[in-house]
Length: 413
Image (cartoon, rainbow, N blue to C red; front, side):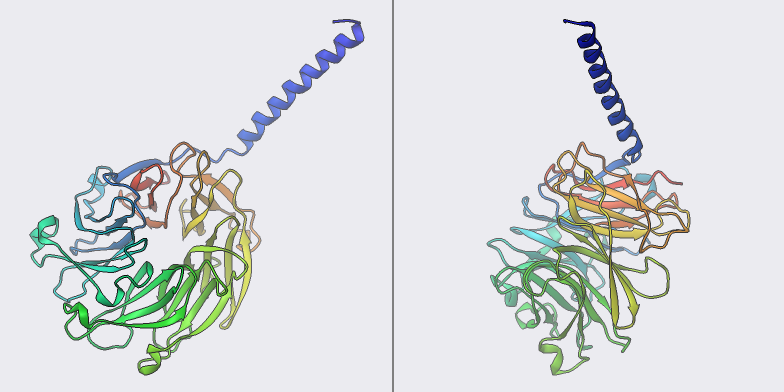
């Protein structure tokens, strides 16, 4: 080795390397986000599960699920089996087969007491469909008793991304607010005719020129008694979180609605959730951001919003969905988020803060949900107590590792 001095230098170098390795291991421990939650599969029978929408279809007090499988071309409904059987595969039915579905939502469109499903499709399909449910309750999970029809006013027109059943004009049955992406993208509403079954009579009214719509919520934003639209637009010159002002029933509803920007025009906003994160009695909005931190828009006055951010932890994918609830049952609202591009990274996590810390400047602590081993592209999130133990579990879809429709069991009790 040479001289005694050179030998000592070598030993010191080895010690430094060992210390660095030790410090690195401490760093991992110090960044310990807890163990992943137990994952339960509701369905993994097809490819590309893309979003979850919830309704109690049979009046048993349990939320059921509608999901579109984008690559598999299936629209599926899952009946909630109750807490004791929630960890098993759920009773399910394929209500229709369509190409490139992006969204599937429950709505009793013909008012016969049975929840139908409306699907929105992109790709070369670019059409919205109604999947008519059988009227007999005992036939609801029988595929042969479902029928599928295209909405003519939607056929081949746009890359449809999302649908929100909403009574817009106060006439006839429920209307359908729909949104698209890409060339000619719009938000608008399909006006329900007197006979909703006569799909050729449904009329389209555009109300906003869009880039790529992710979220739609019906909410009275200005306190005038009618429902406005809260939305996230991730692309184009009008991107950001905004609300569209309902001009109240009349011909003005069939024209462009006035748009109010809340914030996020400089970000690629993904799914949002309306909430009251700071519990001050005013509406807040949280939005996931592709390639950035979570966006927290806090209502300062009835007409003004402050922009804050909540840091995304390291070693996560890019933001996709977000939801808010008291996850650890300590009386403080927590934040749950999902990610895309999460290969080898965390795809779903939750963030907590101390009660004494204000939500706008809190040191949010990150906790694991999905882990890093499985799951690449997760979707929007719903928080539901599926196992009946009193805490919120996390429902979502994953479409790259084909985990399918899954829920993660909250370990807090």
